[in-house]
Image 1 (tube, rainbow, N blue to C red):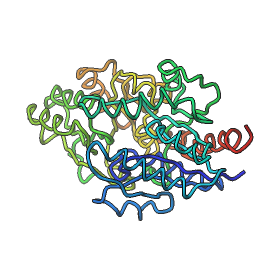
Image 2 (tube, rainbow, N blue to C red):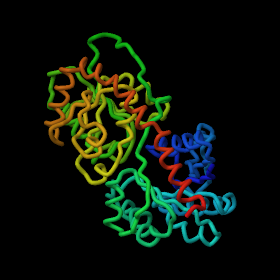
Image 3 (cartoon, one colour):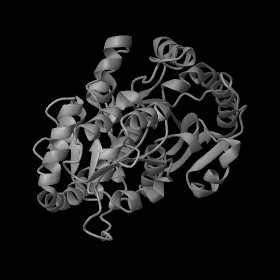
Image 4 (cartoon, one colour):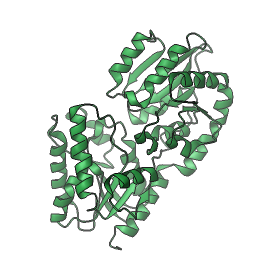
Length: 383
């Protein structure tokens, strides 16, 4: 049974740190014959993103102003969905779109599926707390039971949602993060000379609670024991603070901030790394997650330094190309970096097996099949 799916994500899509989940899932589900469109918005500053992802993306215009953007885009998405969906269309929403449910039902759009990828993070400012209230707490409390189907990124996340909101979710599907090995793959590069620094690499959202600062502090503790540098690709709320930390530790020659980089260009940067790091701290939101960057590093055949949180251990416990930190503090990262440096050839050789493992288990097509099978059975008139 082929499905007609409208997947709503009411964000400035061009500014989302993670575009691949939506784009790659849409493309993978199309390979199974389903018709999928991701319905979103974009910033006027980067309208070209629609052309780049035109096979999967529909973008509506919205008022690009603080506090009103999300409500504006939800209204535009509601109007588009009412006009362009049929009674059989499956509408996938995240928790931030649950406010649309009663209005969709007024127009007999009842095939609504709720997919939740994460818990709220980085709630520091008044706007952060307001967003959490309006697009997390209130929607899940009042409309979380009003959908026909559910999916979560991990079983742990499902359990946390159930503990907080008591939705009574019994039938659901788990689909995790994934990777496209057509885009992320081992790409051989030769160092210009043997005196180049040992390169540690991170990409993704740049925020304080993601442990990036711990790696920077570890770099300061290394002094001149090894010739090493830390490359950070991405933007986020913690960028300025991490740059100040780098400056205060006199590490401007060792810590390199490269800013935002296009999704398809990331493989080139990862290929230049000697080892990649995912320094997530022991916080609830990370433990119930499935870190996409880990799969991207694996697909590129790179060894990794990882913190021993549940989300990492669930996938990579026992992997011989991972150096685990013994704790989550700068000293633990220093020890892990030294260990990785001293075993760099061994780890690099071992990491060649990661590509095959991730291709067989975490390609986006595997995740798309799980979701597609669930939607076919539970959302296509069979229930």
